[in-house]
Amino acid sequence: MGKLDGKVAVVTGAAAGMGRATAIYLARQGAKVVAWDLGVDVEGKPLEKNPVDETVETIKEEGNEAIAFNGDVADMGDAENAIGTAIDTYGQLDILCTIAGFLRERMVFNMTEEEWDQVLRVHAKGTFAPTKFAAVHWRQRREYGRLISFTSGAWLGSPGQINYGSAKAAVVGFVRSTSAELVRYGVTTNAIAPSAATRMNDRSLAQQEAIRDGSPPPSTLAGGTHRDPFNLPPLITYLASPEGGNITGKVFMGEGWHYAIYSDPVKETNLWTDKPWDIDQLFERFRDTLGRGLTELEGRTAADVAAAGRDRVQAEIANAQKGS
Image 1 (tube, rainbow, N blue to C red):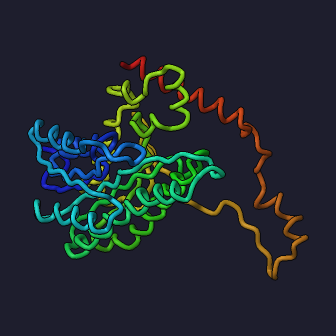
Image 2: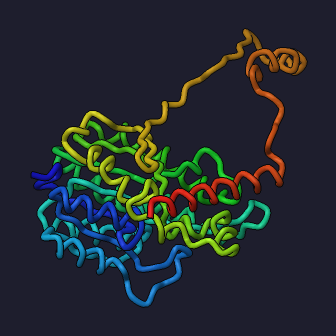
Image 3: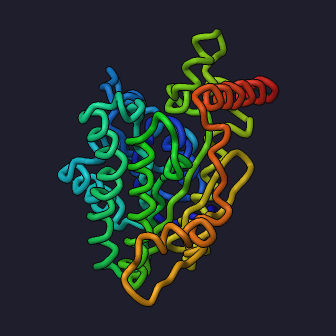
């Protein structure tokens, strides 16, 4: 017996990386899967053949059930058709995993409008569009719905990923807001900030520097290690299952064999006045109230950041080689 027997799932970005691992794993747990991908590389450029067909083939070879859907996650027409395909084929939709995405890494002073728009489109709108049509079904059904969307640790701030970090912060706001809207219909919505060695990570600025220096792409060494994308789907499965029905509006972290949940934002310190602010009074009181504990910036120079990035990448490669 699987944890998701009788459930139907749509997984975006199912051609590679964590989307592929999620589609295969959910199917192993008994879900019927619509594996959805546009068939592009990590920069959003079209591939000659859509690898999502290979994902479906793998699922079927294991004796499980899946179909492929080729389409753009941020296109409203494609999103409606994908959700409709799941419902028409299997009679219902229970789980939506919005994982699709790509990178356009630049510092803010080098980023083009197109690079900003493209990343916000695939990550933010690519979460909204499928969810809209899934939510229509869930609202009508009023029985069961699970949205698991991918955010990233970049939502906390990531140099060189201004567009990506902004889009992933938008995903957090989206799942928290939809949680408040949809909980009355038996729907939960949560976000996961994952970490694994995938083709997307291979293209990060730090990884590319290591690859140019002769290191292999970390994703090619990840199988069976803590960087394996298959480490994440057990957490997704729990959130997608009936047992996860009491969890909504939360942000989780999944990195290797380590799962965590982020705390909800809270106000730490308050500064009050009983009349309109006097600017001199604010300057006098700020440091000992709102500014308490905020130290001088350290370790944030260009050299500091570059050194930390190199150390992190080399540690990941060494760990992957150790486990291969």
